[in-house]
Image (tube, rainbow, N blue to C red):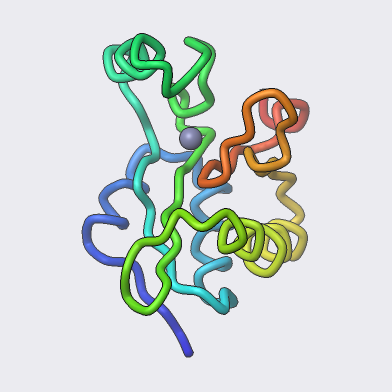
Length: 128
Ligand SMILES: [Zn+2]
């Protein structure tokens, strides 16, 4: 099965680093699960709101520079926040796509202190 991004997902990729966009596009083409893009580039104002609300811990977010995306996995046509789906998106779509393109990415779900399952970003070492 081949999935296609909605117009909303496409719009949310605007302003995102082209290498990360390439990873996300290839990931969708090989993914066993459908997913959408819920957020890409973020304004400073929105980031400040998220920090205030406790949804984010840093004003140094990779979303501010277009180096991060948030994805939402679909299960039977509906968005699901089941952690297992995000591990599958990482292991079976995002990481294989990144590897194939030679673009190092980091999954937020692998963070120990503040795991962020729906979040992927370009590696800070390769993409400062
Ligand atoms: Zn994020």
